[in-house]
Image 1 (cartoon, rainbow, N blue to C red):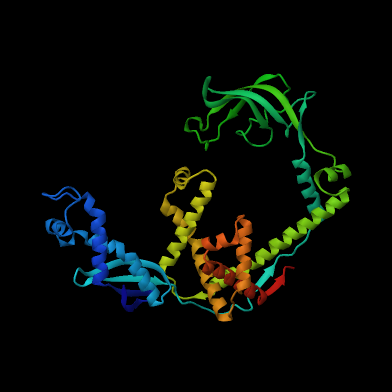
Image 2: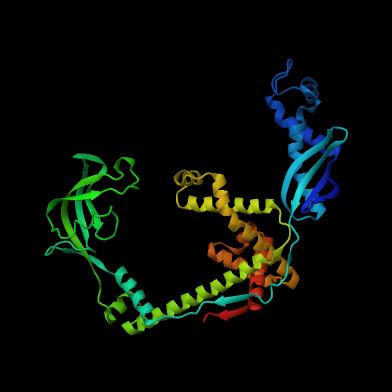
Length: 429
């Protein structure tokens, strides 16, 4: 395979003229004949036994041409791209200009290459870091969450139901005296005040006691999902079986011992304050980084090919489909549930994908301008991290994840660190 010429046709596009020598083409013809002849029946020969010359005479000399070209195309294209020295991101349709046993194959392919961008002003980017503050009220609110997670439900039998209680009920709904589909339940746990049922339903259970049977009157909202019930008056027959309330643990030293490694409540509160401070500090730092990267994206100058954005969108959709699959759902089902099609999903991913492309190009350019290169030691350490994450041996990871990918990721992170180190960061007043 030979690269005859490389011609720039427009910004980020080149035409490659590729030649596949006759000797390689004829060899491929013989290989295709051996694979396909078993299926061919020629009068006077047993099926699969006709010589190549007879088959070509019977069906035409070019009977095996398409198979031979298909066999040779990808290796020839890869060799040509390597020879061109271009960083190709997308390949267009091949235009075959000649194909014959005597001269081999001549073809032209248009390829799209990674764009050359410029970026100025990446040093001295301004960002504002949110103020990190943790108040006593914040600690108390966090403590209440822990208290709630460690609560238990206890049965109440000495009073009527109150808002905030959980009741166990049987119910059946009627419109104009006729029971309707989906309006019946038995042993249903309903938290009063949760808004789980239509307005007015839960409020009318408040005040009733265990064992009572009673009716409640409600009106379905005009925007209710069931068409036949929209705006309708309804009566629900209720039987109240059980009332339960949430019992919270006492906030004392014993509580601290139960939920943490600390012996006193004060020590536990201090640990919550420290955790909240650390979490909010990380969040503030992440906010600063987001501001810097958003600014960086806006500094990118250059003509970026649509193919690059399209590739990123496809990659995003593939990753999304993989995440759905891990949750037991496929993309087709998701689209059906959401009423979307693939094109609508692509539009949804497009803005973020465009940002990702620009950011990646920006970081690559900065790494090149500043000579940011990961060391061999850093590359090996990254492989070790990946191996530990997936509980694999580092050598096996190296066979799966190409070094150029690991090196690229490390370069990008170095570029991020460089830009952050040279940014002007102010703390929020």
